[in-house]
Length: 381
Image 1 (tube, rainbow, N blue to C red):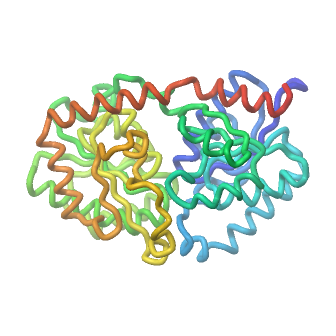
Image 2: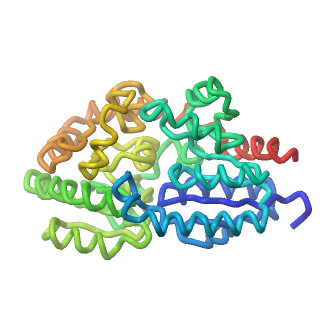
Image 3: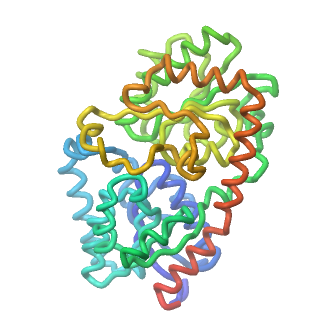
């Protein structure tokens, strides 16, 4: 390590944050080979040399109700992490998504003179526009995944850079379907449905049962179907229990991680709203987006939506490319109906793949280099 190699404090929650942060770290290490990083992260980050003081799944919660139930542990972790970062004084702190956890930490570090970067602009263009004030207090700079975000932030006086999406750099324009199927033990003629109910425990609780119910209904209509579920770290026992209660008899393969392999191999995915929907779009897979919250969380969010969509493919396209089954519509019957409609309409699938390629081309712009340039500017390097 040289004197010019930065030390990063880094926090990424859940599987999607672990993936984004690992891709960022890989690019930054190509620029600064002696870079070191520590904080909260997952196995993909650790594979890049990250020192995980706490595992990322500690932050795998969602919404007000789940936060209330876990508030003591979360606040204790954030306080201890902040103390350690203030003692060690990293060159820069990068908070990857997890805004409810990271913004408070970033504010504390920034007040103490540590540069702070937030990677992944919160969806202020979709709901909770008032959060822009929190961002302004917390982050010296925001790295934005989507091209329309910097203008929104800059109007509020927040420095921001569009860096594209690292997944768009990593995933080839032509999906590796045959290789993925071979890796998972499937043939070219198998019809595979990937179930991705989310990487948070709350998501599994509310979205897992309707997805498994949809799989049961689809199997009755098409007995040749085969199913795969990639499982986020630490959630295998919960998934096993869900399948025992709702998925008995399904021809289903459980994968430890490997969500990208499952999406590349599948003919269709039933997927929880979030980063996985963008992965599916970049892999040109037809999908049905599902989401359901605890009633209290849904009530708190009611009326705060600014767009008619929640799924990233639809938001980026500014049109309904794929169906969204949300809250009361998140039922096995509705999801199965939408899923079967995709499997029965090849021309519709081809049109979707063409639109997804356009989105992929827009988001591919060497995220690691752009992010590295932005961070280097912040460091004065």
